[in-house]
Structure formats: structure tokens, C-alpha cells
Length: 474
Image (cartoon, rainbow, N blue to C red; front, side, top):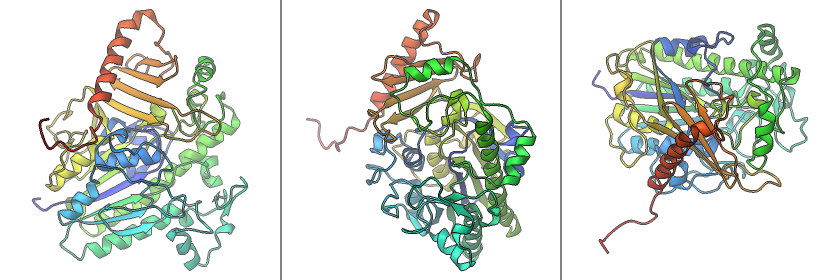
């Protein structure tokens, strides 16, 4: 028990908070994530610091807000500044760190991702199962070739976009990118188990990220279960018009229809695929007798609107579907089992938690260790007063001006400010967890709105890096 633990960090892409059966979704099948919940601690109100991939990943790997490390945008070519990735800190402390799949703290536009001092001694790269299938670096593509599989037999690119494919509905799940990643993870773990050197393995699949391309049998299974329609009210049309300049990847605001229902069923299907293949990795940890000395983390880089409020995909919005995500820590020999923490949590908390678990220093972060909450008698652990999420022109909206917005959520209310746009959002998350009643203009909430604005502005000022190293008093 005194041995430094291994870290198996399983991360999904665009998987929202309400996609795990053990945490309340009775329609979805996630037996392996359910097991992690039974054998670990689930943080039920965990929020990312940006609703877009690259800024979010840069943030949770450093424990700092994206704006404080100049990592605000999707598609950027520069690495986060003035910070250290938790993987680099672990590597410096004697850990063997590996990454399988995407890293995505810089753009892959050139066909690969620019790397800096990330600490990954093993780096096996594939951005997704559909990008760079004809050019660029994609070790998943090469895996298919070795299996004698022509990727065009399982993929299509009907969108007309060059070198961007997605799976056909008859594509076997054992040939998806997530299956390849599980196989590579198994190789890594078997090899590292021969050494006494502790390790961290990051596994970063592309599922359940759109384009909603689950196999037909899974889509039909979830359609047959009559999964609930997305959250939608007529007022979503009005708010959508008011926030037209706050870019979102969804093509307008749309009421639920059969196409959206099929997308939701397909999304559930790809969540199940993640569960299936990540379950293989968890099973191997048990098989090799590593469970007591391996901390398993399950996370996602951000959520997916999935039709809620008439929106799909991601962008400049802060509904729970977009920014609230799963977070599970599991190691039965070290942590509580079957515990659900209901307090608000940020993803900036992951890196300092890993640091404390592994016995290393990781200072100058905005997050707080969650270790106290992982014990059976530790209660909720850190009692956060607020969580904060940013969007600083994170996605490029064709023909749209740059959009800037911030979310500030305390234990009861969520405030969203769209900088440069008059309309904002205020929700009572206790009385209105579905975020259906915007209180921004309600005179009864004027004082609450003002106080939230003040607190949000205060935090925004405090977390900015001064940009210089102080060497004197004047």
C-alpha cells in the first residue's frame, strides 16, 4: 500500500455526465463504468473549464484555467505557456508515462500534433477513427492495414470533406479506433508489469464524439428503448436568436425530431462501445494482479448538447450537457467504494489529485486535490464555493465574430455572461436542474445576479497570469 500507484487514465471525447447507468441513466448499458462506480468514487457534479477539446485538455493536464496558460482555442499551433503538464512532473519523478490516441493540446491540422515537454516516453498517436486516413500520422490506420482491412470498407466520407471519414453503420466494433486503443493499452500494461517502475497511461479515444456513427444494431437497440427526448421548450428559440452571435456548431435551434432521436440513440451506442473496450483494459489490470496498486480514472474532455435546448455538438454554451462530465476514481484497496460526491468539482482538480496520490509536488495550480473525498470517511472532501468555465473565441465560426463568454457556478446558481452580448443566463440549479427558466431578466433575482457577476469578475482577475517573473520590489 506504500508503493507509488500506477495511474490508468481512461478519457472519452465529448461524453456528457448523464451517460452512465450506475449514476442514474436507466436506458444505457455501461457495465464496466458501473463497476468503476461500485469500486470507486464518482464526482457527480464535475465541470470542465472549456466546452471545447484543446483548451479543456490543456487545462486538466495542467490544473490551470485555459486563459491563464494561453491555451484558449481549438486549432492553435502553440503549446500551453508558463505551465507544466502533470505527466511531465510524473516523468521527472520516475514514472514511465504513455499516451495512446489523441493528446490534442495543439492542432493536428498538419497531420500530426506538435509536442513539447509532455513527459510521454511512449506515444502512440491517432487523432480519431476518421481523420488522416489517407495522409498524416495515424497509427490506427496502420493497424487496420496490418489486419488486411481497407478502411474504405468500414468508413464513408459522404460529407465531401477531404480526408475525413466516419464509420458505416455495419462497421464491426472490434475494428473501431477504440478497439485498437484497447489492444495497444494491453500491450503497454503487460510490458510495464514486468518492471517495478510505476507508470501512467493516458488512453484517449475519439468515441462518442459525433458524427453519431454507431453500428445499426446499437442504434436500433436504443431506439427500441424509447430513450427520452432532449430537453426543449419554445423559449429555446428566443434565447437562440438572442445568442446568435455566440457561435455554436449546431445549425440553429431545432425541436426534437426523428433524426435527432436517432442521433441520440447512436451517441448512446458509441458510449457503450467506449465502455466495452475500456472494460477490456480494466479486466487486464485484474488479470495481472495490479488492481490494488493501480488508480483508474475515467473522464471526458467536455460534453455534448445532444439536442438539449435545440442544440447539438459544442460551442459557446454552458448548459450542463456541454460542460458537466463524468469523473470517477477507482482503486478499492485505497479508496472508498460505491461513493458518490455531490459537491461541485472542477477538472482543474484532477492534476493536483494525481500529484498527491503519487507523492509529488505540483504547485501553482488553480485546482485542489480531491484525495480527502476519496476516503470512506472523508465526506465530500474539498468544499468548493464555485466552478468556472471559459470560452475565449475557442471555435472559429465561419462568418461569425469572435465569441467570448464565462460561466460561474456556485453551489446553487449558474451565471453565464456573453461578453459583448446583452443577454445572459442565470439558473437556479436546485429548483431548475434542466436549465429551462432563465432568470437573467427577472427583477426578483437582480441582487443575486449582481453578486454572481461580482464574484465571477473577481475570479477572472485573480486567475490571470501577470506575464512576467517578479525579481524585485520596484
